[in-house]
Image 1: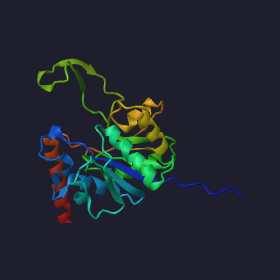
Image 2: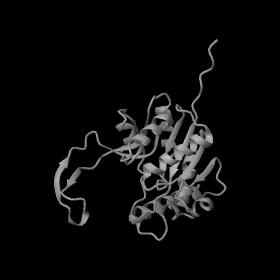
Image 3: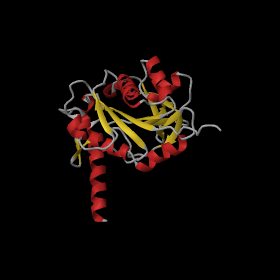
Image 4: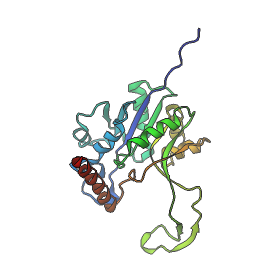
Length: 244
């Protein structure tokens, strides 16, 4: 008689070691307030809304004293000071901590979600899991590009002009969570140190992540304008709930 098939578990890693200097705030952006709650707590709650996420590991920089109080009382959540100089280094540190502390298997799933994406919709998270449940590799939430795309002559916004128009057919904007088999992602991030997200590491390993439609609310807070928009989003949601 064959043994029962092992059911993979789901883990989540949230890199939160950045300073958010582009936003120009006096504290790292993940600790800025959104409708009475730190942004990082909002992002963590969005992940924990899925009961099938066994554990959320938040990766912060050494000496960070704000994460623990910001996340106090959340279930299935722990904080580790494994943050590195880059996103890739922080995620890799988190994966290695999960391997040590939780005995994660290679075929388990790991979801990597930005602390600066508190607008993650529960339906999008469920769609990601449903679309990838039997996939051997994994994939990510993303949005098809709908606007006309221009390539600039320079990376400096104040002096840029149009170099060319880029066909938008087939172009997508990557979001998070990005969800992959644990062993594949750990190996890919360990091998390639110049990647900007988890999907690009998987691509460098010769694999093709699946694209799963995300939502407009799941944008990353990068600029002061983004913060204003996200605050309005949460304020409008709270107003709508109070009116019901």
